[in-house]
Length: 60
Image 1: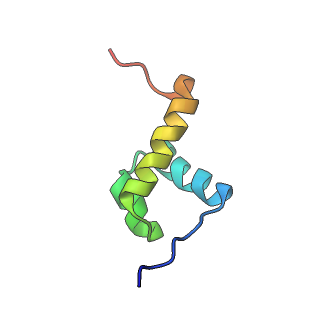
Image 2 (image 1 turned 120 degrees about the vertical axis):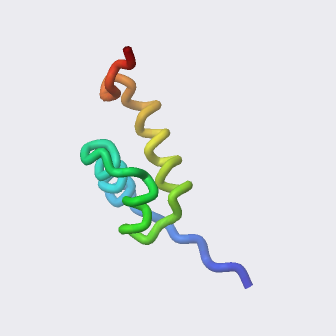
């Protein structure tokens, strides 16, 4: 029997994304600390970056 899918609150997602964006820690590190899949967190981070392009540093 497959495991039941977990649902995460918008607040949890936002806090997890900010841990990556503001601290510079890797997605894998933060995901491991929070006990979630790194691909899941990576998707949340990518969605946040798409929605907030002004918050990303300019590449030179």
